[in-house]
Image (cartoon, rainbow, N blue to C red):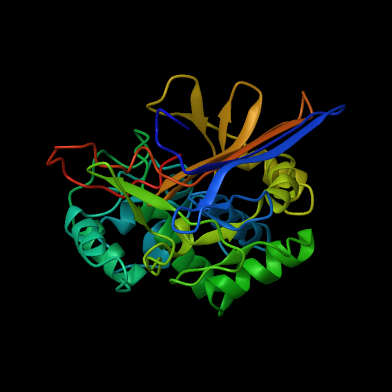
Length: 317
């Protein structure tokens, strides 16, 4: 917390025999109100695991396949005839993450909504980073596209899909799709650190985030969801879960990525680093251990003092 200037951290560790659950620091720098383990936080890229689950459920229903070309659903997107659904899911599509011009637009006026379609159009127009299927390159835009595909095939909006197909069956009553500027209460305030100053990002508009990073949740709900994600219980058939757990190497030592899920040693899950919030949620089936850490700043996104580095939005795992 000291090294990265975290205002607060929420931590949960559960084994088969023990549990450690605690909040550290404050949830609002303006009031010095203490952070609570029941506070809502933006979980950013953990959203990708929800979007991937929807796609895999639709695959099980026969509405698409992992090897379908993107051009079947979004023919107007450049390179769509070369990119498969599987490659979007495991970040080997070659698509860039978010166009720099869009990042600047979002960060220059973070309270103004930017549509996912605008992000997709601007980013997909850029050159691919690599040939589809060849190399892992983390892409938020890939998951924005997957959210559009899921919505199109189901005939309903992404938030309603997530609620009906994931939140309701798992009884995740403290988790929500929040692609806007409003969070459920009580919400932990998130902070970006720019030139040493904490900037409150709690009510920045996350319309752009959609299927890549729009979700909010609490520690207790993520405890339940993390196990379901890692095992498939209540979400996917065993056969479909086996497809989810086919991993490709990433550019991070020891980390591999499946279909909306990563693997590190025996732990399976996802993480996030979005403006004002970062988090990790992992479960080890062999150790029967869950680890969740929810932070109220974003070290990968923060701008160090006295620099003019290009700003970014990674929402990275």
